[in-house]
Length: 183
Image (tube, rainbow, N blue to C red; front, side, top):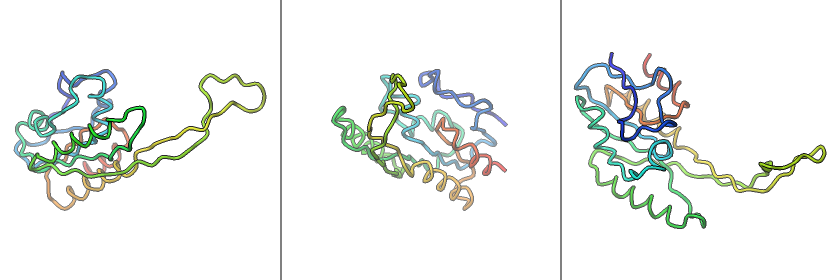
């Protein structure tokens, strides 16, 4: 069994390392392989602070899995909402997703964002009594993306659509589903 030790050197960052022991394992070459891409995790873990934001996901898969037949690439993300502090962020994401849609064996699966007003403690408040100072903030969370990715990865594997699943993510929440599929 051959183990992938991390992303290509050009994509490595200190914060973007696989967990100890890694989750990516290669068994036999030339197997029908599906790749599952956690889009936000990939972006924020490897690409955000680099000049390489327009990643050709199909090319990355073919380089990492050169002796495998890449049958399908499933890319998971959520459409960004408009943000006044970054007004072109949504437009940039939509342009990138349109570019990804030109890849023949790639499908995009969407979650969504949920925004709620919540009270949070101030970072530099001085407790002057029993209560800590708080502020009302908008908290935005991505919802459904990880569940969608896990569901498709398990369904594809259990139905026999692919002989191997490769996950491009550094999210430890996928540890249990991967262990389940490996058993």
